[in-house]
Length: 208
Image 1 (cartoon, helix red, strand yellow):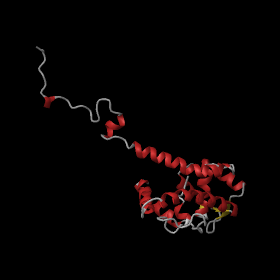
Image 2: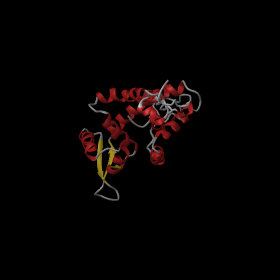
Image 3: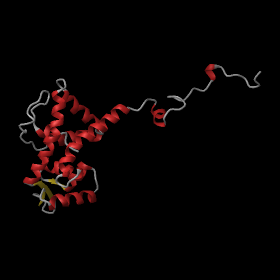
Image 4: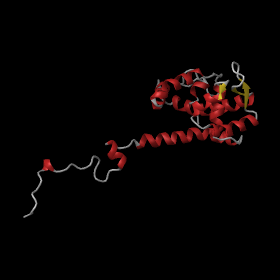
């Protein structure tokens, strides 16, 4: 006979949630991580930015150049401070990329209208051409998806992506996206089913 008293079932310590061998993250949240969504988002983003990467490479540019050029093109007159707030990068990181775009004639810097000490950024004709070329390539991927999806897919996608943004930034980002400059749709994109008006600046998905 055992010398120690046996514990009743109700007195036995319960096993850690998720099992004894549960991953720390799973034990902490009490649920299986959403691996499927995490990985699908990774692969979707990989292919989405890959479309732009191949085009940028032929110009000797990378993703950082694209981010700057995209927002300067959509918001001519953007200040350095505003651009830093959008991209959430250091001024040192921005300076390197911006200098290349300025030196190669894709972006130009002008004195501020109300404050001459302030520098405002504008796309050159060359810069606008490249920014729109990239946006239209990326828009083609969205157009293919919406053409094969049910009605309202674009609205659902917009709502989902907006919800993924931190709540404190959501309203600001929504206003920023809606306020950007618009450009004529490219003939080869057209008005696909579920693709709204086909306006490039609304379907480009903003950034790589």
